[in-house]
Image (cartoon, rainbow, N blue to C red; front, side, top):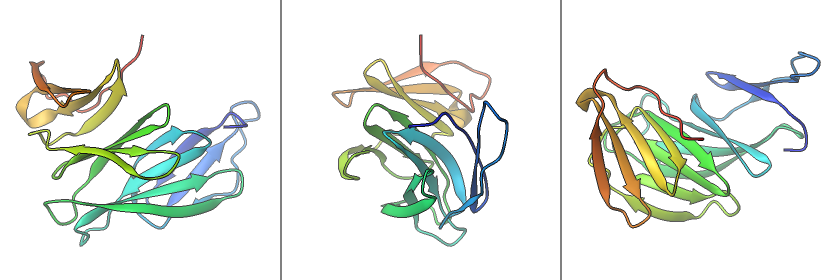
Length: 166
């Protein structure tokens, strides 16, 4: 992104805050009730759905110009499902609670790959060459490596969020 920003969302609105001035820029209306945000390339990405949707919608947001473009709909198994979104480099990871784990190219919006993680993730992250999922109900972290191999790691305590880094 050309400028440093702090991003926050509330239902159908994205707000940006300048960390230097602590001023809030005009809000950007979204086409979905956002559940998760990620930054990849020069765009902000939002993932969300409505209570009667049979899919999650992925939107690309240009915070400089305040434009929002729907990129794709990703089917879910459960109507009104929620999902988690993560980004690393040019790759987005969409993890619905029910449905296929999907990697999306942030440059083109194309699907790079899909996989059934055999989990209902509450959060997802990308890093160390793998996708990482917090699976609260099973007290697990699920690692999906670049070949698609799935490893479950018992962690206990109902993990609800996950981050990857040094």
